[in-house]
Length: 374
Image (tube, rainbow, N blue to C red; front, side, top):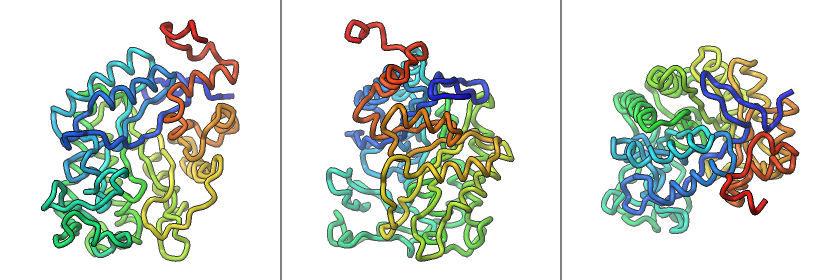
């Protein structure tokens, strides 16, 4: 029986345990150049010291207009490789696999950071026109027009078919740079209402070309991106994909758990992805959130795990805050990996604390510099 502190092998990489640091945006590139800073290094490296098996970066934009905010991390140039490489080297030294989440924000991009109320920023300021599958489907928040830094300009535009095809190349280039930077894992971000999720959902995809309409057409660009990334990233290193399993919009035609399970099964069967990271929501302000208690998203991971039928691993997210809870997910075959987000913000040493709680100090140790305290 696997437990939280059993190894997790993926191709020729092995994570020392089943704990992953969830991608969490830091909005902390002060020069608005997408380059990792000392903050990013401290944030990610401390979780490696804290015992996590996999340390994943925040959503990292594959091109400048792929950022969520003007201060987000990027991987669209060799300068970004140089800025990220010290993080991967540190993770390797301290026993954690390093991962980078490759992303494009789509029509949710070009905003101020959350502590500046995520105010939209247009090209007359220091923002950009955000690309979208269907600009007419963009769900503006009430008052966004008035609060925008430059409300009199266009903020969102529909991508042409050629634009969509070029997006695949952007993800490929970022995956190649991820390898150059030394990352063990790349994850394709197709969740939380960002660009690839916008293509998947009929709520935000109203296209009439080969990237819109049927399930097969709406999922086409995600299949193309994942396949191209798999081909570009070294064969000995794993590729993950993150999905929102549902839009939480039961009152309209939307992306559902069954849709997610079907796409995940196809990608797993074709050997394109090694792990499916199952989250939910984020597409539309009308979403009907469930009660966000412990494990509230785990049933989605279970449904996807059933669908992939052992052809890919599955990670679960959502309200995972305790060692016992994370361990039970693995022991009870609900998921292969516990993806822990906000608890890692509260406790960078979640994994070593979990090892103590579960009497598994043999599996991961405090760094020798800190042992006098424990």
